[in-house]
Image: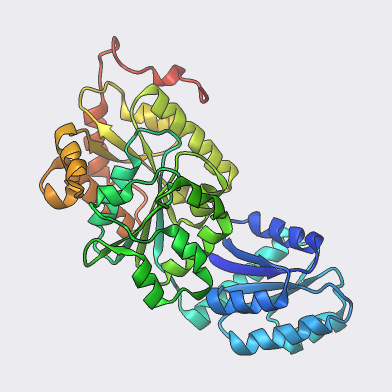
Length: 405
């Protein structure tokens, strides 16, 4: 079961803050929108089809909210409706349930009570929409530039065997279109401007087709166009696109800015790309610490080494111990073939199907498609043998490396 998707409504900032605090405190829920207006709530629920909507009852009788609940329960029966209020009187709870609410939360929300409600919403979602809805979202990220994130993301997307969308979220300097040899007529800016009326026809006209199974959502062509794009816009757009593609690969910026964090929040998997040098290892360690603070489970994160060479003297188990994370893949450094594919504007997985770079990227794509989070024992033994070196004169001293630069 994927993460639950919620839309909230509260007429006061205080009520909104309390609900958001509970939602942001768990990795089980994605917040799609926060409304203060009933009409906007109805429009967003109908458009985004969330798992649940939380409506804060601001008054003791809640008559306006009860009418809203009745409207939502009729127009969107697959969305669970949750009411929340400070007043937990039997009369208020019973009235909200009679109006069509499925659950009730007393403010302030305790985590145990919230988890119980989430369990029930999960059961409701399975019963009404099936055990799984929407495509898988895979974020490709590095907090350090120059490690080949765009190259890896583009080729990973091209290596998928399912209907895939590559979303370029490097809003200031996105270059995924050139990696695919495409001239994108439309970009994320057009999606955001038209997000309230996105349907299959409009989505198909705004994406740029690369092949029968790969499309591109391009970054804004001009940097200033990114100024009007907000994190909530990205969340809504990706949520809608995930209903139409089996896999979405995100080519992300190298910073933990609000747009990138919103995309990472939405991702089912994060492929953290690193280089095997001291700055690359330090950057990866810092990124993992940020992921921990953001509440991401380690099962969501997988580390990939790019531009690996046999000349690198570092022991695999020391890198893994330092990161407290397993390396799931090593993409070889093949400068000539990689630069050739970039200059041609064609993914290396398409023009060099038998190259070692292609074979490794396709293997990683297979792990993503199968939702596997570990390498096989045979693969681990192979990597261990490749990495094990006794040349102390040139080996990186992982054990003495500080966690921060």
